[in-house]
Image (cartoon, rainbow, N blue to C red; front, side):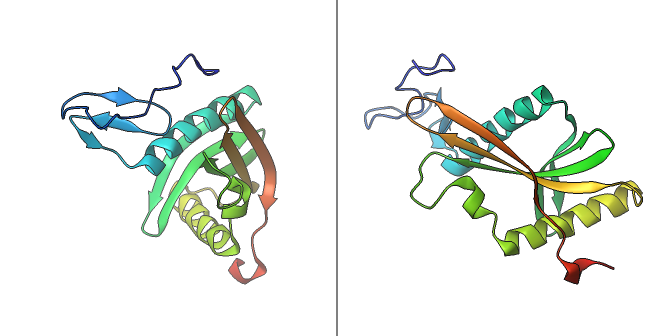
Length: 160
């Protein structure tokens, strides 16, 4: 069993499983014989853990999975008087670098553009904002959740 009370075999599917059987775990979910995308399942689970950690730290969750035409902001929350846009990166392997390495300059720019959309649609123009990154690293024997407050700033080219 892992730290969340799941059996080590949860989320795996043996070759002899028949369609219609269901098994779920943090990185894999199957329903009616159709596997969901491993990354989506891990991402949703990572967002759940990130929300729990943010709430523990005093953040108030306002929205999850805020969608725009260019993408999605994982979590929008308040921390004190500051509106916080949170990108969650969940990783089950370090093969492609840690979660923080995945928030490239291009991704940061897209997050800022989506945040500007949120602010405009919400009518919030005079609210202090920041951008946090939550990294969820899933290791064989434990899960690590790190919050990087003010992880990046708005590029000068996006100031209006």
